[in-house]
Image (cartoon, rainbow, N blue to C red; front, side, top):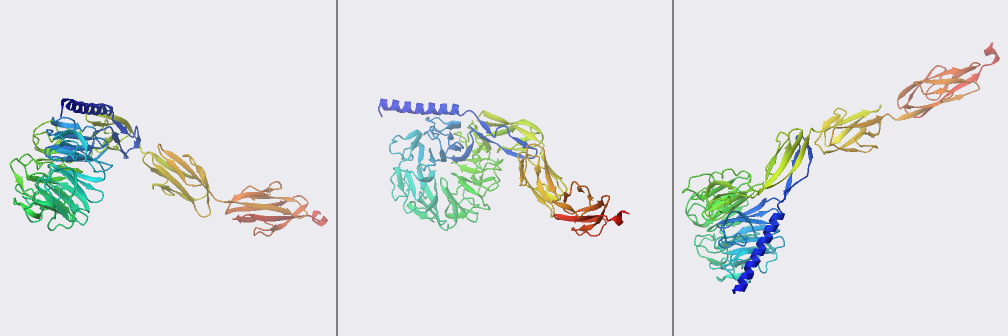
Length: 623
């Protein structure tokens, strides 16, 4: 490369690094959402934060580690002699540094001395050591690249895995492409020629997962079998031999695998029944079967049924469904993570890693391991000579240490008002206000959470009718229970059901009206009135005959004379009394079930008409 070309490369790298620094400054603000919410005592509120350095995935190379952040950016730390940290330098870092130019990444994988990222569009970018073409870009002719380069010809990748000095990708169609070093046939194309561009692995068309080890590769097929190829002097291909293979061979006895993970010198698979089988080098007990005898066929790891596997060089770890982690094999540098003394080995899974109880992901490098926690932080343990633990030191750790600047810490300024857990879920404890803060990588953002006493909803039934009012969500059944408390912001729907012989006339209060269901969103205690009535019917009196007089009612309503019709609630007992005028006589009732000349008692259940007959007295009646 001539001097001018070298200068252009340097300027390009500097421009990219400066652009990255500018982007970092722009991303300083942390915003906590929702802003200024109100909840009730006992109610939960989930907070989220943007602008934080929170990991959603972690993977380890031999002596470096990388984390995928929730915004699609990447941070890496540890050894950087080949540019595997991707920040445009070859200076190792004891704390996470940003990978230059990476946005929108969907996955990250660490190899021996290189790293690769997969994007949602199925493309790949790699950086770091390139002496065998492991970056997959024939235009990159240097032995190292400190910034990402695009892998040639890969546009439909669903997974990517970096091995010691080679890389492989699983494509949407179930085939596998590999590139880089091929000394032992680890590219699987039937040759031992290195390739700077992806080549198809022979005979693999139904793969669902692929994992690259130090100098070998394995693929899980749709039918639950596993095929491996490449280096095999320790039996890491699992086919009962120690002969390398330039094309895939079937792993003996594996027919129900659901996951496969290749270590540097061994391989492990998780089966449908939850058990684990491993094969390959076992000099430090890394196969976990209670021996130190290497095996060219799968052996059962003693006594575990984990959810995920992470083999390293001379140790292995497993993640369990309860969020704990257990490791086995060499512990010279603290790889077991549980404080066990150095210069010891464990040939079966050791005691759980100290302090890891909620891990969601796990990765192992050559001599270290890391776990991802729900708060987006990362804990690492083991060898730290190249700062691969990311805690700002080069001191080995026999128990997990926190990776600096990854993850978010949630706090409440007044825990008597509300407490908040590591995942950002706050619980109201007492009335008042508290400041909820999210802190990440030395930056913070906050909002105010107000906690109120749980508001009550009270129903008052009015009127002469009968019926019930019920609520959804449950709490009110009025009838018997006419008041209930709910979380602030709860939308409660009330439904009125009149009893037989009654009608529902409508709601008042709480913003409700009409006769349909009433929905109240509670932010304060509220009273709603439900009016229930008995149907009203009419009683009409008609005066007949030649005489005159009046008819009155008890209860009042009719005074006929003037008012000869009135309405009453259905079922009312009305007594009518006829009073003839002077010179007239009352001759009797008809209608309403009445007769005779006494009072007329009518139980009104429907519209009713009663006639009162008056006549003029004759001369004899007047004497």
